[in-house]
Length: 452
Image 1 (cartoon, one colour):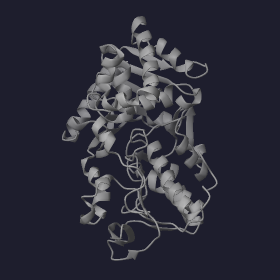
Image 2 (tube, rainbow, N blue to C red):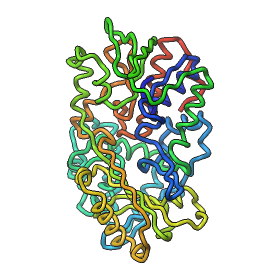
Image 3 (tube, rainbow, N blue to C red):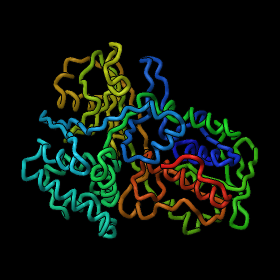
Image 4 (tube, rainbow, N blue to C red):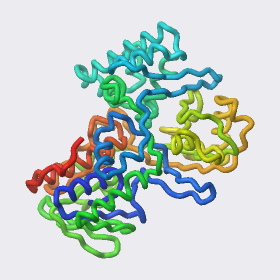
């Protein structure tokens, strides 16, 4: 097993539960991949490298956390209640009702005050049409961008700005003019127009590393597995369409019956022999682009809002997360306010210097939330993930590979594998479970004692 993010750890734990001898290799000193946390000494807080939300429809992820025994570290908000604030200060709450799904979300859209009554009804009908298209017109959706989909569904400019585009950018990490409509449709179908519990918003009240990394390593070791950290795999040795071994950077060679690469696509290509570069299954990986996420963690001298999450409309910042309320929903111990600001698909912000980035965030914050104008910024920490996810244009989405490869004993896992979902935590865990299931089937092993 190469890679110790959500995909690699979920695959390794499931294989270990099947009674398989697992060796996990991770290049970094600690597990977590692109979803990890660290202790920030000046603030005393645990900081996630980026804000990651779960939803009730994340069945594979919740199954994994239940297996690890960390499900109680989540805060589940059964009813959607997200405050959306426009640049001019107008507010509206997207709040579901205590009705069976999907009526609960239909009612939320019909009460969404950023839109006029006619626009709300058009929004509901458009969402219903989109869900129908995911079932009957998938091929049409797969050719469209989100912006083209809006034209097809007859959605007006205000509905796009106040609902569709904030949602699309958040879940796809890509601009609507570029992002796949099919992936947005799958999110809407699963998260908002399924069972009522599927639309639950779920936060981790601990850092990501405490949520899954530590428990996963312990589970692997408890089953007799081996974990090698801070040691990169240099290359895979391939003979007769089979991986015969993995050579580590320190010169060690590891042999195994099966191999799983739970690393980004560029790393897969780097590990394979050059002779395989022309193989159709692998050559397409070079065409998968990437999309960034820029996050600014900021500490203020007071609490600015009690809301755990606020969506910004028509600003550079798209979402703000109140970490004090997420970590302690009933209020913290009087420590200064800790907010995390997210800008997805933020290519224009990658080259902006940190001072300018902070100024932009503060300008957006003070414009949207007047209560912040009297708050003093104590400290700011920008984090830029240049290759946070793959780019999910319609063309790129069609290039996403399956878990199995042309090499008989090599499997791939990661949020970038073709699952029909955007590159999310759920997609990563699903591919980890798929890879483990495929190996288990060849070994004649049971699935591993827990399921979705």
